[in-house]
Image 1 (cartoon, rainbow, N blue to C red):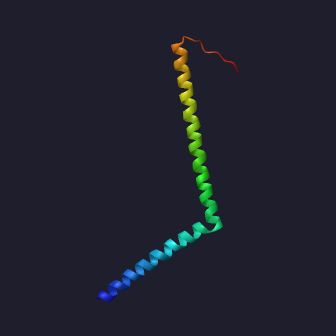
Image 2 (cartoon, helix red, strand yellow):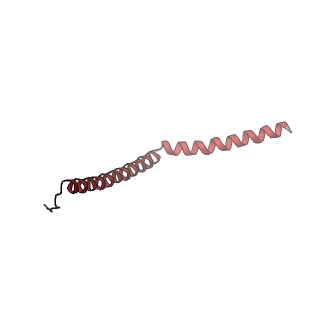
Image 3 (tube, helix red, strand yellow):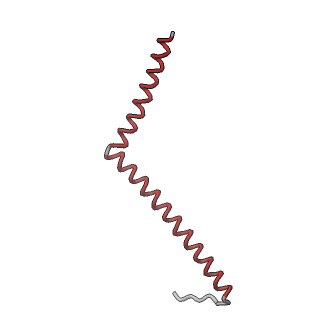
Length: 78
């Protein structure tokens, strides 16, 4: 009975190693590396876009605060 248990444990570990090995092998292929680079590029672009939007919103709010404090009227210089 103990031998059967260890055979099952060994088979489970073998399946786990094979599945992880396939995943690792795919990540190290040129296609896998390209997917990782693309994913990180999209994440970086998204976070940069969020940063720019937050910055512009904060800048507009601060400009409004300063105009109110200094009693300036809004002018469009476009």
